[in-house]
Length: 195
Image (cartoon, rainbow, N blue to C red; front, side):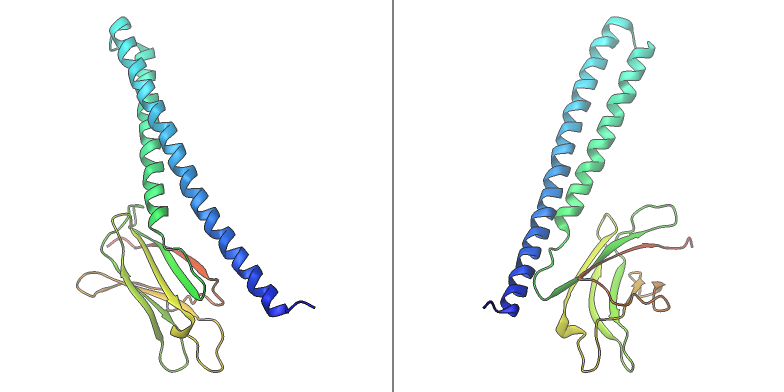
């Protein structure tokens, strides 16, 4: 007769392994697409240069090739950026929880250097689960553990974030918008109001 606890542990380990492999596959796919777009941009730029020599700089086909090469280069840059951002994201290990996200300004641009604090709301004192700062892409990630929020009579954490600038001025709080029953990995995208 099999031990149900052993089976659950095996299933959990298999699921964690599959999720880890999927995250790695996503990164490989992004890198492959970026490489394809890089080669495409290079071929289009070469074709543009040859056609420009034959037809002149102002020919509509030259302009079309120029635009296509620029689009391929922009796509390559976007895919490379996404690959870097994906590679930086921490992988959730057993008994770990992750809060990650991105901070943008009112125009949709990433905001670097914002202090991000994650809390578990409690009856008396809220638990600080972690502190970090946003990177050049506006990304942040905080890993915490069950011991950081588990208290007798309480279940999952009740998450909220507080964002402040380098002087400590509050930029954003989700204290009035608690995230109940969070999963092992929670994503927040915060758009700061215009000042």
